[in-house]
Length: 433
Image 1: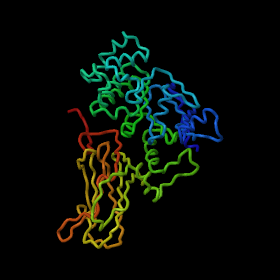
Image 2 (image 1 turned 90 degrees about the horizontal axis):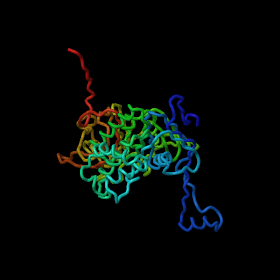
Image 3 (image 1 turned 45 degrees about the horizontal axis):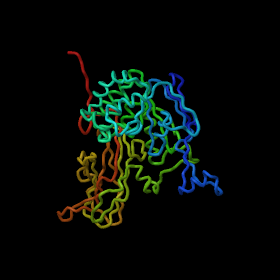
């Protein structure tokens, strides 16, 4: 498809060129099949071919910050390992201009028996630095890592947070021309993450090249100049962060044309109800559910401002939560409710049809109601959990007909977070007096 082709920019000197990269793995049903094939015993193929990458091409210019996004298993980490030389491609070529420093996996390049200081020397030596050069960089590395006396302990005793602090401190202080980060920052605390992102800004101003892989769409939107979107080993497209995040949201619900498919995948009613699709939409398989079932929640989903079903909403945009409920028994005045919590369980906001005076009527057995909650997304960028409920009063006795706690996850994508839980959308001016 023509619109799927990579848009190669004419300006700028390439730092990285990946040309028609394929990475194929052989999958065997039984270990003995691998041996039989190696010795040419038996007839027919003993394996299935799995394309982790299938004809992926990328061009990243010097000084750019480029994001790579996609679902799990899309090939993001594979392309990074091929760029850094950790893996060899089955087909294709990679050309790199400049010294690379990569944070691909926690522990990569570290000896677990060595202490922190020894691992700094080990990594620096692998990058081609002399002991004298590493000695000069050591104070900056230790200051950035900020793990205290743990630097003298074996790294196998480190928490994941301490480990990534040291790994990132080494990666950014060895004067790389190209920095590659693959989800490693997700284990650091919020203050360390802020320090790392500040370093990203410094690197950008210095003209360094950064490749950034993350599920944090807010960070992708804020820091990246361009974004590549991968899915099932195929390159779906390349463009601005907004364009590719919008496309990624369609991938999550099967409403994006996959270059490896012959026809458009349509997310119909049955597809939305399938377990696989629900998982990709952020639906929680371990939802806490209870109630009398006198009324029952049948279906629910979130739509963005274009009417596309999604689990990611851009901060400041309008979105709609849709809930379908069947009334199983005559009820005097059912109340339909929803709420948002943060991951630690703090209830952030919510409402119901009684508060909103949106529905104050009896419910008749057999009726199916669709409740729509439409609002502007003012919450800060991050992860939130939605809970749904149908309740009511029977002669002043409060009853829960059906309640689903933490039924789905919503990601708020933001390139500007203010203080607190939500953004007041202030208009701020500074003038001379």
